[in-house]
Length: 191
Image 1: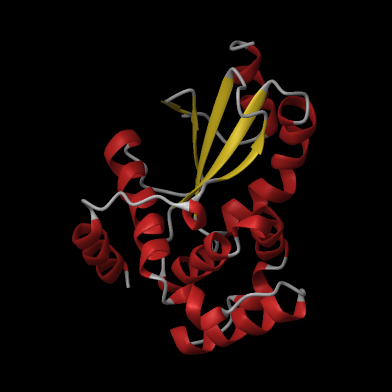
Image 2: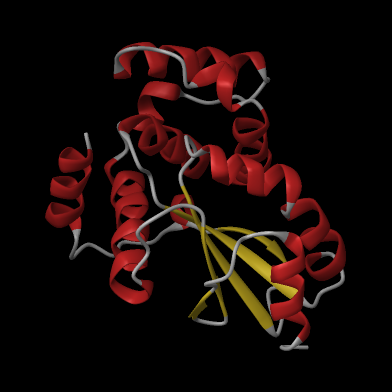
């Protein structure tokens, strides 16, 4: 599966189309002094842990206060994460809510031995949560597919991203252990 994603990434590597349906999922003040990029895969348990144990305090102390903004970037590690990323981008007006719901309930939708089974579970989960999504249209949308793959390519090219989650703060890769204490220590130096 990794080879598949790599081949897709190489194929679409030169594409940079951005339009209304391929806007970033951003939380915080657009003009914040501190810009945090979070490269994530929706099937990554460490990413789900970040959303459960680090992001709420980060949001409270830095994002909601206007000191920082966070941009969630796609770095799918498998086909299930790739399709979930496409769903988030397709329903951009609810992208943050879908993102949080997928991480909070990760084990409810990543089940299955084939991508078809996982897609079926993902579709059922999205419907159960009340998100109005044309599932087939979203996962087959080529512009969104290119956008998601370009996030991954840019992460590797610009920041040497090779694992998730990877945090970039003001264009510098966060190299410490990803917990709130370490993140706060770094952010405080930038205020």
